[in-house]
Image 1 (cartoon, rainbow, N blue to C red):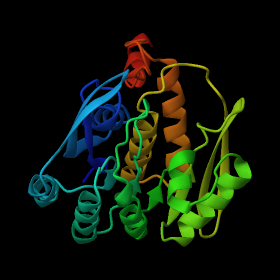
Image 2: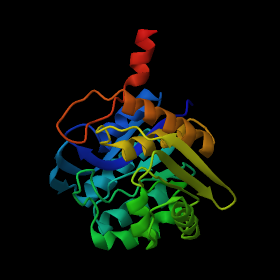
Image 3: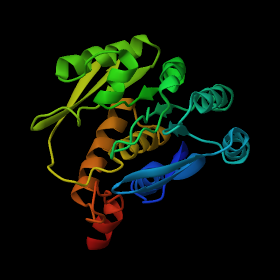
Length: 268
């Protein structure tokens, strides 16, 4: 059976730039097959989040079971969960249903515009969930919240990534987009290796959904059989091109050009 099936467990973004919508676009652009379990519906555009409606717990679990009973998954991508209750539900579902599929956990806590997307009491639940994760992908503020450390430079990224692995994640990618400087550094660490990815910062307002996009791109690579380093490297390259291909929509943090591989094929 062809690999590439990705079960995405996350919130919906009505503006289409982040969340489930960005996830589906990313998986599809990279040749995978996207399936979803929606955890919340957000009222959202490039200017911010103005409302959140949580999906009932039995419906979240029902979506997961419906996908796994019939279609199966080669990887799971977990994004916005919202509450401690939902974190625990999804964690239990993953233990029961993911089997050997790799799991990419993106601990979504705050929207690009500043709106909270994870209840404060859910952070401990995320920590407890980390042992199921093949990879956890926090940005610097999320890594700080999970570790209690100040994550403001490369040394702190390395220390935070090491702490996250000690807390149970098989690997951690601590992203550096929130850390000032002309070079963006992402630290990938496992129990036996560390790798630093470097990219020249792109000065742009098109940054909505970058975290969702990167995590889904990594999950797609893992679903297609890539090694973790290869999956991260390809995902970062995809994200950078998507930022460059941003369509310029909206008046705030704009969406990415997720479909750039299709456009590139059409132009060639």
